[in-house]
Length: 603
Image 1 (cartoon, rainbow, N blue to C red):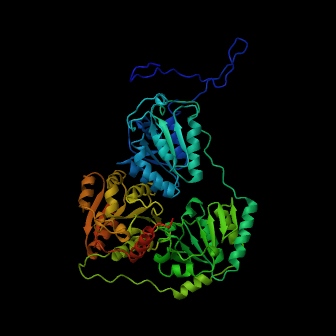
Image 2: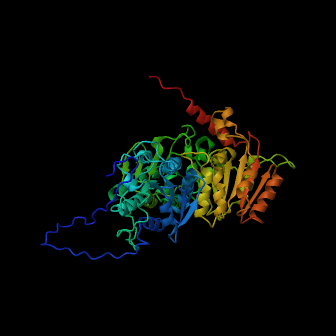
Image 3: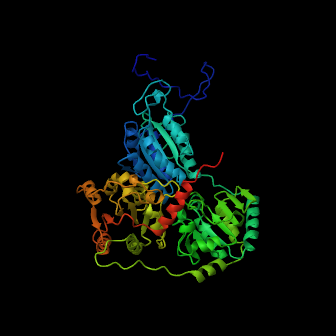
């Protein structure tokens, strides 16, 4: 090796004769040449084909010198579209939104400066159980182990910093710096993402994507995953114990949680509701996973901020089955749910726990729910009680002519816009609570990020979801504070020709944080939001913006957005009073504040 400072190594090809016999004149090995089309048989094209094969047709990327050759090969794949984003954080959020619709998403960034920038979005996808394939263009393979210092690093001759950061927020990490095992590493990473429904990290050395190799044949072995199976004896025992528990209850209920998605058990959950006759509710983060037109649907169970009359039915039940719940401080409203463990059956994707015991492992949720449906006696008592106490919701007070617009009036009009051809994206903040009260028509999509709760998530997620569901018109409800974090990728929406309707709710600050703990740091600099979007538009693409301050202007804006400008990205800035919040946020904020401010336990 040349030991001069800054010198390149002299690269010599390694022997390709893996496990070959020594040649001593007695034995001659004749190897048939392996025929493959070198243009299509590169590492980059293999990765591209695998992405298309698992359902990814759009990859969200930010170019950097370590990933440029890889991007060339992704672009060359006929079924793959490269979506260039303004920053890595939004590229990650877009892959998150795409995965919510398609079941898997992918993003490509450069080494360390890109990887650490996208890390927050990947952490959010991990918390929400979304299979996102995060691909990073890594250092030249010859630089590993050389004690060199590279750019885009923190100045140490250690290339593992990025990898170590990703290890806690991905379920599998593959560092591809040689061709011999690249095929296996890539396939293992992608299959692990799909099996675990979590993000994975793939780093590919920048000098490898264009190199052909026999393992990257044009017709690879079809990609397939072995199905997970329940332990049959455990399944039978769990169903028998659960049926006995529920059949002796007087007014049982069932509540769907967010892990219905990862367990692929939404249909099985509805089948159980059909068979049992139980009152049916969802946790807030499961909204959209269960059809709200179901005859026994009673709303969102969210403790003290549940939809009207739902909490009373759930918390007064003598037995409840929770399918795929996540009980955190937000979903439990500061740990204030009035539930008792001895009344509950908790069904997780591969485990069932009945009251204080027993628990049954290796039992898949969808198998359990389907088998349980065959064993339960029909019991409609809880739903009948709900019908007795239910009082139809009132309507917001009628606005006076040109009166300042109220948030409850805004969402009354958003409700009327919704259909099976729309999807709603709700940003972290008061939109959580206002959107929970929307009644979703059949086929209407709904997404928000409750577990991670990263403000700004919705801009990138809207980009990704709209790219994945081009047959739907996305309606995004975004607060002004959140929009300031990630606003740039409205630009990418325009480049992609998306028709999203964005309601930018301008109330002058971080309203959700005001209700938890107020201070001057929750007040933000006001922007001319429509002016900003007009500047981003810059005459390229289809875009329409407007400001509304009263109901009359809102009605006119919605008519334009759904009529003359139905093929445009429509940005509607809604100006409301800084203290105009949902009553649910007021209640939730005070309870979460109390949970946050608990004094230390005595030592």
